[in-house]
Image (cartoon, rainbow, N blue to C red; front, side):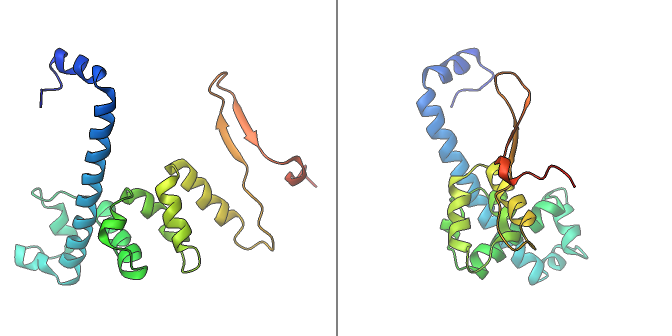
Length: 175
């Protein structure tokens, strides 16, 4: 592999755009496989208190160790993904590794027995933004008698102004 600071390596990347895309996809998959393995190991360290063998008084102290250096939120997020998708819903680590852990973590609070397969497929197919919208939509409809889709709000790529997509019959004009 050429150094990416080498100008010939950078121009070479443009010439082999398709190969670069494939390499990115492969590296992302490897990253996901590493993340799910890390999730399993962190859970073991926490549950079995392996950190005490390392001279640490707590799990948090162990993950903060400069040799490990994993933030608390990342460690607990990885563990939550493992517990939700592997332990609770029976997905294999290889299945879970098909999807970036942060997408699975994002939807973990809204997944249940009834929608688990659909949510897992959504995590594969949808962007993080779409998953976030779905999560907000579910929360907005939580205690209401009928489901109504949440409007989308985004900036127009042409003029930069805000676009609000909603059915006029679903808008409240005030009371």
